[in-house]
Image (tube, rainbow, N blue to C red):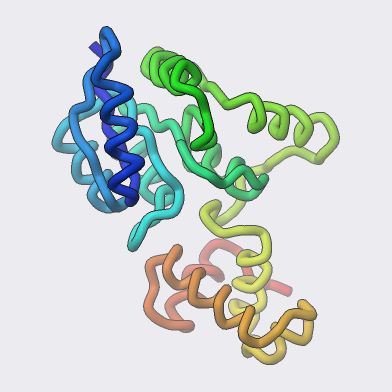
Length: 213
């Protein structure tokens, strides 16, 4: 029996997955989490074989939850099930330790195949995501591990400049974006790094080698 935990902040989507999994032989839905933090707690409490993890959830996001779960509960396989198919999200999830990545439009048999594959320790990606991964490694320089993989490339650029001691107005000028956009990026960075102010973010960023110019 493959024991599955669903982590998604949309009740209707969780209900849909629940109904889908109920009729499957050899698959049991053992719990539901509406936040990343709750997913971590239930992973430890219930020890599921597979977690279907959304990326965008209130509070602790799915990427950070995946990272913590794969470290603290290495026997639990995480399959990302999300609406985001951009390269930043895909590779951040891979770096966080996800074994699979599917889009929310995936067919039932595709989701079931991913659950069974992940439970067996195999990596699996939806067709669209697989094409992106192949194209990335075929044409790009590769995806080397980076500091703070939950950050987008732009957020990492902003954090690097913050760590260098530059203010929002200077960052906006250097990156040729609006001041409001910089503020939004900084707010997202604080949330993802789990810090409450700029100085704490700078300390974390410099410890990771950012801000060196």
